[in-house]
Amino acid sequence: MQIAKLRSGIFIALEQLMVHLQRAQNTLTRLGKSVADKHRSLQEALRERENALRNLLASSRVAIVVTNSDRRFVAANPKALDLFGISEKNLPKFTIDAFLPLGQILDFERNGPPFLRGEERRGRCNIRRLDGSLRIAEYTFVANFAPGRDLSSFREISLEKAQ
Image 1 (spheres, rainbow, N blue to C red):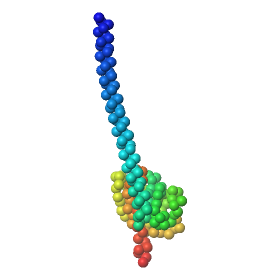
Image 2 (tube, helix red, strand yellow; image 1 turned 60 degrees about the vertical axis):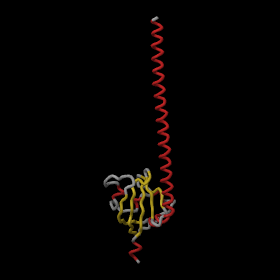
Image 3 (cartoon, rainbow, N blue to C red; image 1 turned 30 degrees about the vertical axis):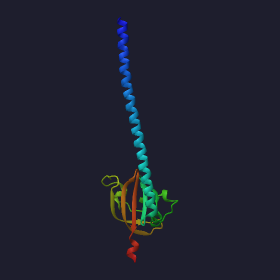
């Protein structure tokens, strides 16, 4: 009789354990689906940003450069290549610091206040081209335009003043 009660108790405990395990499995399945969906939506958002960047580089009337977190050039449109006096082939060899005097634009040095994603800063800067000539430009700097990527646009004004 006691063995029957013991078996019955064990059977009830196993049924409860199975219910808890099934709930845990269902929760893990939902979490896994949620993580997969989140990853998928982040990948889609990243692709959209990259496409927007490609379109911006192709259609912009101003010089645009994209830099990584080390301030190294990642991409530039033809106007930017001309402004900085470099070729697309040599672009990845340079950081933007090679063309801007130290401390001129705090945004590029990250010594100023922290940036918010998409935060925009504007101003004027001197650009020292590879050939040594100086260009003056108005810049717009957008921090973290895409993950790990900053976007800068430059409108040259030194030519306008010369005319």
